[in-house]
Amino acid sequence: MSNVPGDLKYTKDHEWVRIEEDGSVVIGITDHAQQALGDLVFVEVPEVDQTLTSGEGVAVVESVKAASDVYAPCAGTVVEVNGALADQPELINSDPYGEGWIARLTPADKGEVDAMMDAATYDQFLIETEDA
Image 1: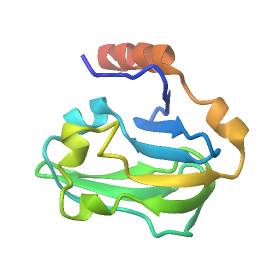
Image 2: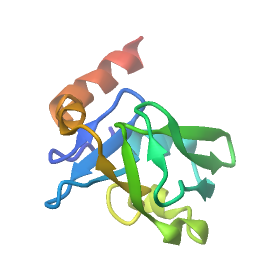
Image 3: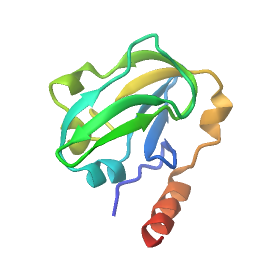
Image 4: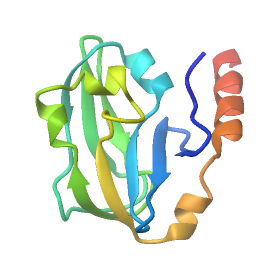
């Protein structure tokens, strides 16, 4: 079973969002997503100051099995990226909700973040999609 922390928001594309005290949001891929991908060998992060629309490809994670886009869970501007992933893409495998974060955004509309799935809803989503 995947680890689904209760303090985060989630998308159907298996991204997670953590709301920071300053109103920015940190994003990454879920434990479920990194397990499905397998051992990551490369991560392409977005550019700082890049403006994103919701659902736009924001990063690429590549494993020995496949490459996968990471989608912007909300519209906003990239204010920081996790530079450590360039040399250590496996941080996403070992700590997807901590050291394996991908980028920090200033969201254009906080309501978009509030509307995302909470942990219980995401957990249920995983159960339903595994049975499908």
